[in-house]
Image 1 (cartoon, rainbow, N blue to C red):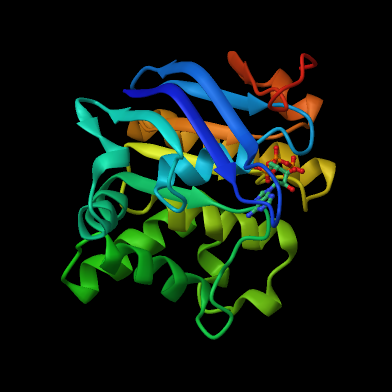
Image 2 (cartoon, rainbow, N blue to C red):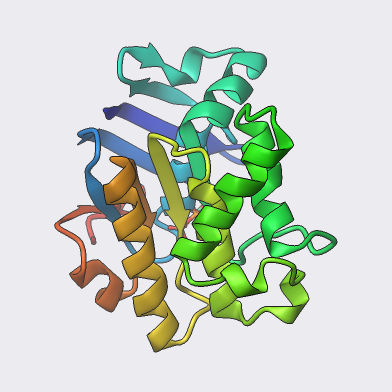
Length: 224
Ligand SMILES: Nc1ncnc2c1ncn2[C@@H]1O[C@H](COP(=O)(O)OP(=O)(O)OP(=O)(O)O)[C@@H](O)[C@H]1O
């Protein structure tokens, strides 16, 4: 389970007071739950996901993963935790352009600790099959459509069966058909792996497909 308590991120402004860019009083997410992080542009959705992933340090507050305090981990401990527990999906996929679809996934499998090349290949091909892209395993990202690139990114995020998947506007670059397809795959694969899924979006169609929404507010304002 994931728990967020009194979390705040402030940034320095030249010559001014520190500015609060994300604030969450309390959020509890049970293991295996699928949750939307909603909120207007600038409400701190990305910043919250970055703090959970350990990509940016909170200014104050506590972040628990089971009984572990994520915000207190050293840089090395955080890297290890991330490699074994976390899959991250970006709006713009962040695939490595010099590698093929299957190689992009295999790199993630290596970071996840799979030492054997044949197993990395097998796991990656299996995921590509599940997202319907086994026939394009050798394609580099520039030969894949945007929807296909995001399906590779979903496969990459799931190859180590991480307990936690963070997805930041994963459908924002996709057309409506691909939005539905990518979401369906992501939700089904997370359910099959019992992975907890936190998905940040302001797309109402995406929000409608989830059982629970957590609404972020712009710090210091009352609107949702
Ligand atoms: N390093 C920084 N310095 C100053 N302001 C920042 C910094 N990083 C983010 N911000 C500001 O913090 C606010 C929250 O940003 P964040 O990207 O978390 O919002 P968001 O809810 O994900 O927005 P969107 O839906 O537009 O992606 C924004 O107003 C952003 O401009």
